[in-house]
Image (tube, rainbow, N blue to C red; front, side, top):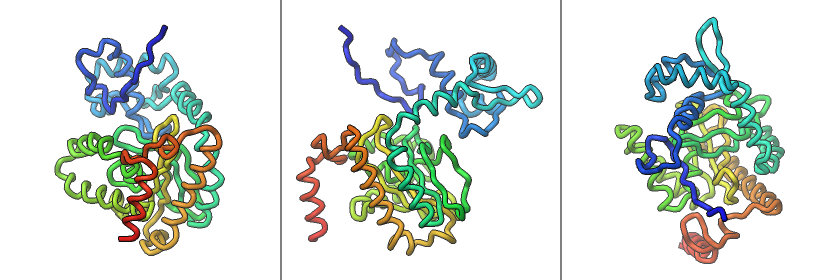
Length: 301
């Protein structure tokens, strides 16, 4: 009989325990190279890949050759640079095609994007980033041109902060420690932004990033309650500060995004997904009844 095991997802292969005999380091290094690419359009040289992965150039050369032979990377002979190949892209899209959250959210996101004149995205955590699983844009939206598969920072974007706000304190703390280690100098300001976002999600259901990632970008984020095969997901509305002033976010778009998330949660539950509430445990470890009582007490107070 096969014994079921709980497999911990590592943010970096270097974090694995030294006595983990099941872990294949060579495979981890190859996948680490693939994860370095920020999008399907980015091209990188062996030198750039070595710098980003902290692997030696000879190791990178062997990995990129192997990955190219297998179709996971495409090699441009003229420039010597690499981009993600059809093999890597097919794996990603095959995984996304079975994610019901995208199908449930897409028409609602489309409608809200047109109303807001901005972009609406559905994201999942990927290490210290959030990766775009779905994005809908208003025809009038002007922004960064992000697309499915692109990543944005976890700590300073509204969608990343919304994800963090959905976690229990125990689940959030190790991630905060990773963020702190990644940039100790920026940590005090980053921590204040995350703490403010957690408080805002608890009080209003949404949080904001007002120029915290890029000065000209404003956004608001909301977590989904329903757990998916990708774990906790989050939604955001983002765009230029000129088209998304703070007052518009707080009075209109933030509450609309909260309502959209609730509708997506309801649809996902009908498809068989289970939410934190349905399992009897809320994201902060409280039972649904106790969580509602605490929320009611805050409102009354």
